[in-house]
Image (cartoon, one colour):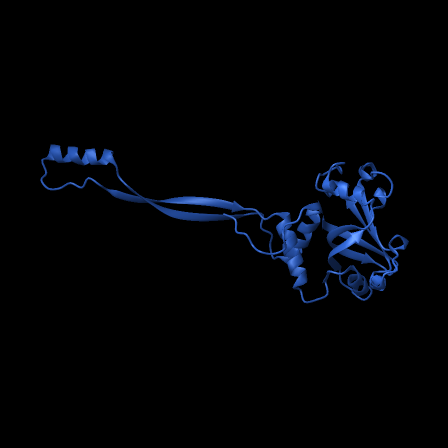
Length: 235
């Protein structure tokens, strides 16, 4: 039976780069298990029924033996049960995020602004695990689903003139234009964005503006342009 562990609540992923996550996972472990088999032995006891009682009676009758013959015999044997546990890509994603967050170095950021600042001086890869709002230009006019399917990817971006704000905290946001391309082949439905899918309804309902998304990925770029390589996206 599977055990349930407390942690981040389950989420509905709209994009998962399985091969990319497997590559990251392989770099943080000594060896990769494809599956694990658990063997359990259980002792089984039982009482012998009427068949053996009849046999005991016949033996007594033929041999003429005196004395009491037991009419109840107990026996036991071992039963072996095996279960195979396979680790899913979602579990390995969690292992990668946990490893990065506990690494002690500035590898993982939960703020895009802080990550972009660190990128200016970091010589190591920068990973982000963020909750932020992104624009989807393909949905600015009309449905957008046809454009996504025709081009083979969903374009998301943040920053630039489309996100200029007069709010007091605007200075905290990254000034560079941030973009990420989401391959349709790795999205939840695989191969195409469906018109009635949850993500399409949200993007269409918000006209492609300020869509709240959670993203785990790596960050690259300069002070003028940043690119996120996504490994997982969920709403």
